[in-house]
Image (cartoon, rainbow, N blue to C red; front, side, top):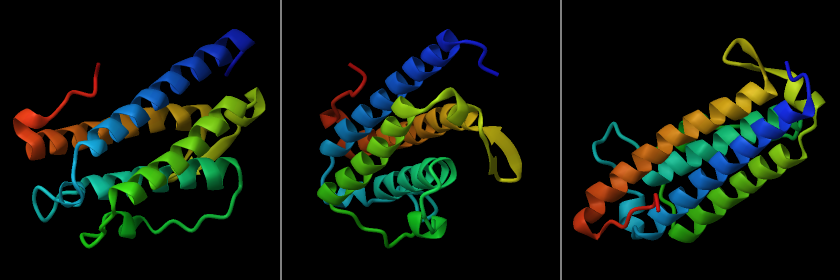
Amino acid sequence: MMDNMDDLSFHKRFLTGKFGEIRRRLLAACSQLDEAALNWRPTPESNSVANLVLHIAGNIHERIGASMLERPYDRDRAAEFDSTANLTRERLEQVLNEAFDLLCTTLDEATPELLQQTQNVRGNERSNLLVFHQAASHFSEHLGQVLYIAKMRLNEGYQTTSI
């Protein structure tokens, strides 16, 4: 899988940068929204920014905390998407930062052995390295949803998070 430390170093640098960018942009978008906008759903079947943050955090705690680090975690995925979920900005930022702290610390301290270990994700064995890469892709998709909601709510008042 990873034949040398250069491979490991490349993956860790790439993922560290990507997760840092996702966190920064999520927080920047959320900081522009009031509490009503953070909990607003474009349609009854859609997710709010709060739902998306809860979902990202749940994914991190399940895949990283529970599966990689063997920490106890009982995920309630349905609650992440509950239409009555209502978070303050402070709580949303706390949930997001705690989850990304766990993610980034685990990645930073990950040994080649940990990255090569596998876990079962929806019936498929995947290396922990692949789980990190899939998380980067998954969270980027949800970042796009958060940015779209922020632009919908703020219109011309939206300030880009990409620069």
